[in-house]
Length: 608
Image (cartoon, rainbow, N blue to C red; front, side, top):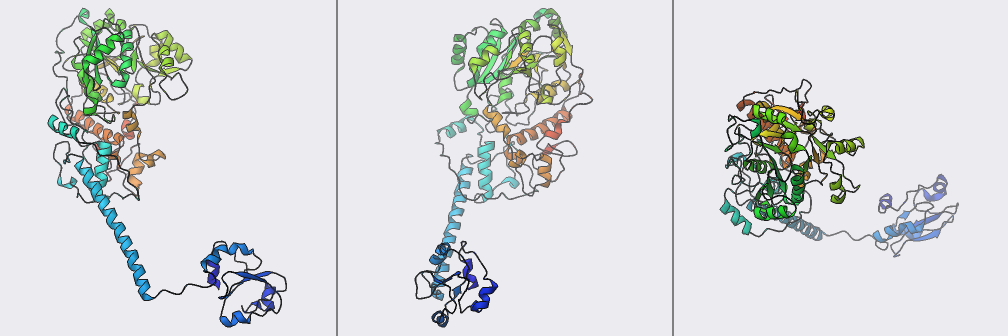
């Protein structure tokens, strides 16, 4: 039978030669063959396939009379038909099913499919219920009210997907007061479950407005502005002295300001040593420990108790995952404890040179500070390569190599073991004149002629007074939290001038949880696809709002719009003529007015 040869992948269809057909095999009844090839046949009276030697005139009338088919496969090994033998069931096909048996079989299959669908629907509904309940029963936007277009059907797959995404990525389940937080902290955390099976596609709604992203937890209780809205941008620093108060050069004093997580407390004694143990530091530590406990540890490690102003903020309460570190709130808190005329801000992983305080206190520099309340002195930032080849925090090798003086730093630069900070990000520190600084005399100020990028984020010494723009507290975790401060300083009339011989050097630590969260991106972008191309030409909706970088970029566009409309442009340092077009790097679509939204499919984009 022609159909029988398809029963096994091991069967090789070998057509008989013309000679075999000429010897009576063309009709299918005779099986004589003069060339001595082996033929395969089966009969209803045999439980297995058998072979016979092909001889001319061999009578197969018994098979012909029974209507048994003969399989002619030419010269082929009989062992290849083991699978075929099992399929034919010992030489005979099973009898056809009756109508009753067929209906029963179909009924059983239908019940199996129905049960499977029912189990999947129950699983989806329970998942949505758990995801929504884990938000403490509230779906709140920045304003505390969710619009009807954002309400989700509790039993829909979209509720499940959005609920899990919001809880896992956005953590948009913050409470509005301390009492609700206490209730949440007592509830036992559910165990993480792994969802198996095919993923459910997210419904596409191109007309839906972009979701408003709020901070994961209400941080207003620790904010110096007591604001819970991330887009409530601020003009000035409250409770600071007046900038109009006259100063003499002898009045100019400095406090080193920083913030840090608990795992970097060990760095503070190095700051105490380099900054000078008689000079004040104001620090905020993101830890569940008390300020007294942290102070006692730092004093035992070599800091002076008289120089420390320590505050702590509970990590387990405000950022248990470590991905939404409230960096700008902590910076503003540290500034609020400054009791000198001026402050030097540096992140804790940037260690000051040993002469920094003395250089800032030189009479010529102090005179400039006293005469200009909006002088921002740039302390050039450098980075040192990790001393060990493997990816680990090898402190025993890194710490002795961290340069304290300009000569040691330039020696490392010459050996290519140090460089200007993050040369891969040209906008970040590219406006600093590093080549000029190399030959710049100690204590000499060199004004920057222009700013090359909105991403410029230098570490600065500034006067601590009321007109000083604060760090915008809506920016949490990694990304755009310092550059927005520098942008507002420039627009409000601050003059940027770099200080000769002074520097900061970055300690080569491992990536933080906030940085790892920022690095996450859609699979399409990992393949080198541009964001604009992805949004315009992708056949499936890419929910960029599920990624930290897109949410930060959207908030940044709101900040730019606010500053352009509300902050008077008094810039004394212009943007360079060849300044970078930073907006093309944003994970948003840009409208004609310069604003944008992540996943706004109705507008064009040139984002990168």
